[in-house]
Length: 496
Image (cartoon, rainbow, N blue to C red; front, side, top):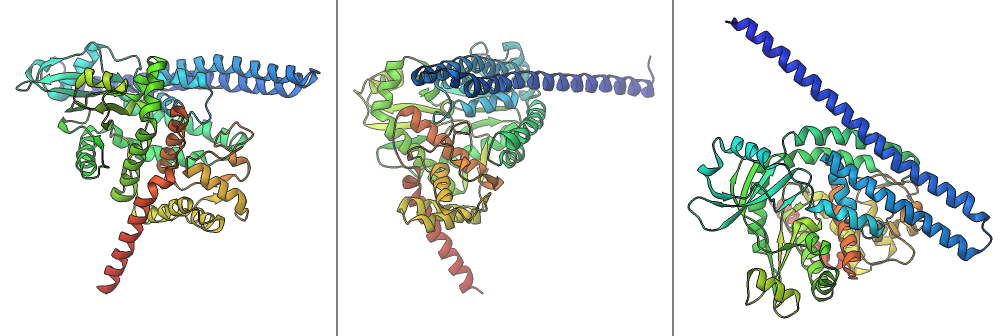
C-alpha cells in the first residue's frame, strides 16, 4: 500500500505529464494554424504579383480584365475552402473570427460568405457522450434526474464555444434550450488569441492601415465572460426585461429567460422561430422573399434595439451575427404554420425578432457613450464636416494625418454609418479602402465592439440589399442620452 507521500509524488508526476501533453498539443495546434494561414497568405501574394506583372503583358484591355477576374475568382474559391477547413478543424477563436468574416457582405467575396456562413450555427457538433458528460458533471447527477427528454443526438446549433440542445424539464411540458460549453474551450481560445495577435501585428505592419492589435486586446479582456454561463444568465435576464419595456409599435423583441445556470451549462426558455443564418443557407427564393418583405423592417428593428442598448442601457450584445437572430413573423397562426404563412406574405401583422447568445456583451461607461453620441448626432443631422471631424477626434482615435478633414469625415461615415458612399468602403484589400486615405494608428479599446456592431450592420444591409442609415436610427437614442447626461450634471452641480 502506497504511503501518503508516495501517492502525492505519483499524483504530481501525473499532473506534470498532463501539463506536458497539453503544452505539446498547444504548440502543435499553433503550428497547424501558422502552416495553413501562410499557405492562404502567400497564395494571395502570388495572385497579386501575377496580376501586377504578367497580366499587363496582355495587349487587349478586355482580356486583361477577364484574366484578373478569373485569377481572383480561382484564388477566392481555393482559399475559402482552406479557411473554412481551418476554422472547422481548429475551431476555438479561429472559428469565431470566421463567423465575423462571414457577416461582412460589404467586402468579403460571395464565395467566402457562402462557405463561412456555415460557421454561424452549423459547426460539426460534439459527440453525444461528451455532451452527456458535461451536462451530468454540471448537474452532479444523471440527466434523467432533471429532464424527461434531452436530445443529445441533434443539437439545435453549434458554434465556437458551445452547442445548444432542445429538452423538456421534469414537471413541465414546455421545451427548453440547453447550452453546453465545450470542454477546454477557454484554454484553447486564449491560446488562439496569442497566435492571432502575432498575425495581426504582421498584417498591421505590412498590409493593413488600422490598429488591429487594440481590437484583439479588447477581445482578450472581454472574452472571459463567455466562459461563465452564470454571468450570461444574469445579463440575459436583465436585457430581456429592459428590451420588453422598449418596443416599437408593431414589433416585438424576444430574449430567452434563464431557468438554471452553472459555469458551463445554461438552461433557458426556448425561442420559437428560425435563425437568419439557416434561412440564408436554405432555398434562395425563400430568403429573397424574406429579404423583399421584411428586410428593411428587420434591420430597423435590430438597429433600434442596439441603439437603445448602447445609449440607454450602456450594455449591449457584442456578438451580432445571423446565427444569433431568430425571425418569426407573428400572426394568427403560430409555430411552423405561422412561420410559413408569414414567409409567404400572408400573415405578417407584426415582426418578432429573437436575440440569442448573451455571452459576449460590452458595457460602456457614460463618458464613452457621450462622446459617441455626439458623433452619431453630427452624422445624422448632416451638420457638416467640421462638426463630424470634431466629434470623431473626440473619440480618441489617433490618425496618421489628423489635419486632413476630408479623409476624417469619410472615415467617420464609413466606420459608423451604413449609407453607401460611392467609391469608398472598409475593405482592407480594396483600392477604395477609406483607410488608405488616412491610417488609424490607434483605436480606443472601449469602442471596438461599437465599431464591430456598426460593421456587422453594414454587412447585413449589403446581404439583405437594404439601404438605410444606422446613424439616423441611433440618433434619437443618442439625443436622449445627451439630455439625460446634461440633466445629471446639472443635478450634481446643484447639490454642491
